[in-house]
Image 1 (spheres, rainbow, N blue to C red):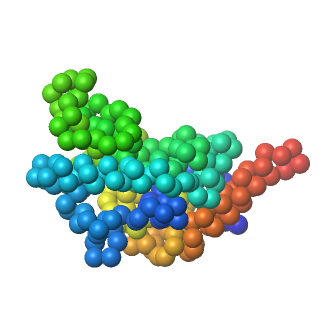
Image 2: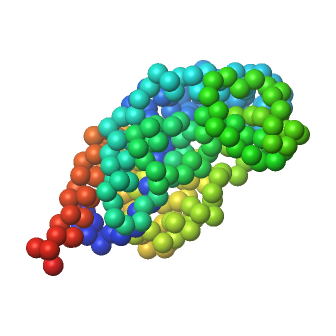
Image 3: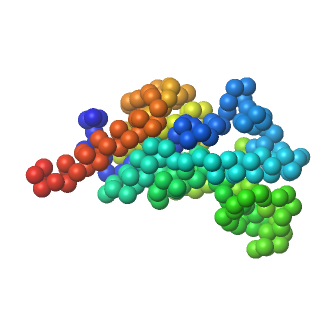
Length: 247
């Protein structure tokens, strides 16, 4: 058990593709820099959307459909359990665009890179839940000016809720990174920001990330094993601290 667990009141958790990989979803960059057989530059940039909207829409339609065939794994379930039982402050920030955290039951959650099951109007900024195919050229019913697009933060675009995320990092006691590569900014810089503000830092990852050296502790292994074990210990420590016998 980490010696500083009993000092923890506020936790910020960053999750990446590695936590969903065990559910059967591909990590963002596979061999050769591909995502599900496509070059990321062809499906995840504003330029790609402008050049070939049919390709970009089809790609995300396929990803959206694939979500119907996967389920949250033990790591998602453990984080939802922490959300339900942690008495202090908690924020789960995910780089993932899937809905597995929500389906597991997590509520204190932000999607910084958007969501597959959402559509965005680039003209008025309205975001709306979306299921099924999203055809190119579908007009926004709110403003009538924009063509709806996948609600995905493309390369070159600003992630969602950065002010809220940075404020939470500045006040957390513990920063935990789960299943991230440590190579995609601005999320890759969160651990340095957390350390700057005095938080303890923990990495749970299948293999060392590009930012492993910034963490106080790095535990390597499958998220479905590491995350439940860490949360079991954290909640047990909370229970001990709150017990009248411990006072």
